[in-house]
Amino acid sequence: AQHGLTRRVHAASLEDATIVLQPDAPWEAGVVALSWSSVLRDPVDGKFKLWYAMNTVGCIDSKCEEQRSVGYAESADGVIFVKPVLGLMPSPFAANRTTRTNLIGLDRGLDSVWIDESAPATKRFRAQGKVHAGGIKGAPAGSIAHQTSADGLHWRLAGGWEISPCDTQS
Image (cartoon, rainbow, N blue to C red; front, top):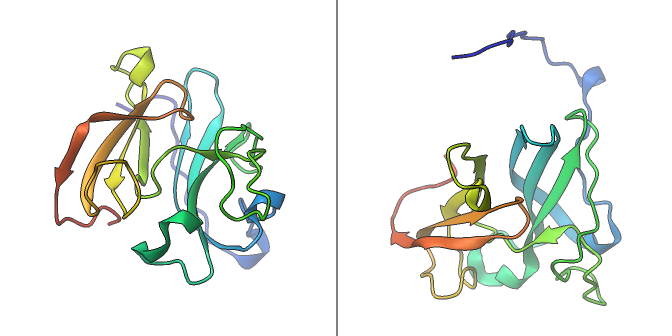
């Protein structure tokens, strides 16, 4: 059931276009694509949270997993997103491999993030998607993996993976 929601459809126009996210942080040098993303509003803190994949030039297939990462951003209004410096993962894009980044340990192929309000607090955030070569340790490329997190930043494998020929992006 939907409570307090109103659907408003507006005609799209270029004048109203707002770039929500672009590779503008120092640790994103060389990033040309901010692809798949999941955005949701966390009912606990009210923030809009965004997880997105980053690729470098020529890194669109699974031959260069070391040049892919997942970034995290958050917003109070769902329009202006901030990339907090988390210090969790080094940047594969920056020459000095700095850990002063917004990168998190979520496998790049896990392209669906959601909140499970019925789960224990330690597994409230969930993600699933296709594992790419060099992704989750021990998981075969092309398999489907599930991960959980208490905060949406620190992830762990949840119950293994499934071998599946399905398309997880559609």
